Length: 270
Image 1: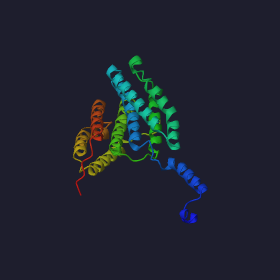
Image 2: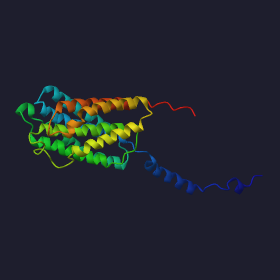
Image 3: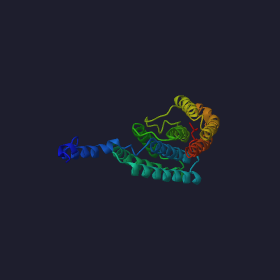
Image 4: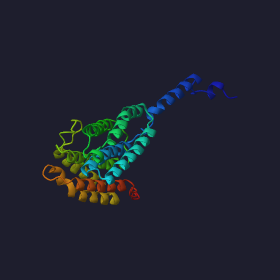
């Protein structure tokens, strides 16, 4: 006959089992990986700076309707990205990020929609100041958010940084006072620092993907296009070429976008 005590030796009391299950349930949210990863963060950064760039490019081009359409398209892309990020928010930290971003995001879109250049022949200074200030505020909040790493996040980071430099260039080009009239002092980018920083970012990223033929080829194209506008950023006050910077930035970002969709190289058999 089997000894009852022998059959249950080592078994946990029922109360202890309940406590263990409860502890595991409470632990699950903290163990779960963040739903908002670095790719989502960098994509929103990219859209913020693209909207800012297109707002100022519309001014540079004197209210040309084609550039108004481009601004509208960028704003719609930004809405889609923001909505996707909002759907991914799960943790308290992610909800807090969204709660902090949402009022600024809505105000940012309203400001970007207030470019008066087509109606008045000039852009309302307050609208330009709001676009510049709110872009910097939201970017800072995203920079300070501890997002989980994700594949190709570094390529999206490069795209966002390139777009940020272009947006700064176009903001200066759009302002007759060279940025003095619309400079809010928040997030001002100095090209003497930003250009070498992008050089380093590009070099490091090319080194990382040197064994990935497809991505490395895309980065070679980025480097080639970057070489066409690099000096223009450094020497902005000598020779302003906003159309060239806008066009090549667009091409660089499209190339990086395509690179992120390329499959990872097959691993060699061990």
